[in-house]
Image (tube, rainbow, N blue to C red; front, side, top):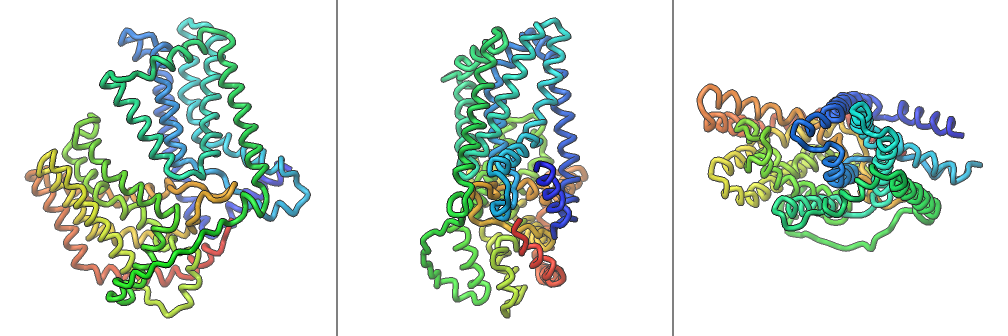
Length: 489
């Protein structure tokens, strides 16, 4: 039966209408995976000797701070790890045990990169401990316990993936705990380190996380088993409809009509509301650059990178998925007498308004000086003049339908944020950094900012030309997009 499931997964991948796009993105993501694997390998081998050189006991130090490693791992999972999706409903009428379907689905998560990548740190570190004379059995039991905790995070993520705002809650919790420890108000490691030390120093404490993992797997299995019905976890939830007129937008004609639809979409759906939340988080991204908190970011050239993100959070997260936001009724829209230019203009205006609002809110960066806020304003000009067109252009080739009620079903696509969004946005960040570097190298920082702003103004001046080109591409991709949106699996 497992072979049958694997066969179906293989067919679903190659028969997808967006196969070429998904394959290219998976190859690109593969390079990123290799990059992180090499980093984890280097840390696994080198952290022992780095700590020894600093006159610290490696295993004691790792046990002290590993609680933060576990919390950050859970935060990253909540943000990026997608739960594997199977087309469950057709399988329910076949002579397949429900337990088999659930075990296979949960087993797919066990092979996730987010689980396996930890082995590239823990295995080399454990090998180095054994080579350096630590007790072999203690090391093996410690490794088993820590890896069990990583898989506990995996199943916690599965159970919590249909809950709203958990990413922000856990991120805030990690920031508060780290801040309290930094300012010596409260040190959580005083309470967690003894537990991890006990795992290493005794032959029985390792069983606690192992038994917890087994129990959590059973809980997860029972949760999905109880929801594996068409009228339970697999049913569509119907919310009470709310009427909002927004008649003041009627004065803007066709663009106003589309803007009303977009505003209602953002207010009523989990996926879109999460996108707004993420864009607010981007607003504070500049603190990493402008406070000199991270040495690698203490570079004036990287400040324009921050300016793009701070002012363009909504543009990046929302704009990358135009027209996917309307995938549920895109076919119906295409049967109407709707001008593409009006449709795209409404999306463009929505992103521009959000960029202006975000830039205004970001005025608190004036605390760091006029130069810092000027960098954010220049980033906003570039976002409006250039990146707003680029995200719309990229949207023509992004044929991934969006489930606006993401997280409602037991086995649904529960992630409100997709790493592909960030991958597609990368080319939009290189040009302003290059322009700023060229200007600041040839003259000074103000010239670099002037070059970036100048390109943004030029892009705004040629808006009509850009829209004509984008409109033609959307028309040429129209039927391929409709075919892709019809796919539900």
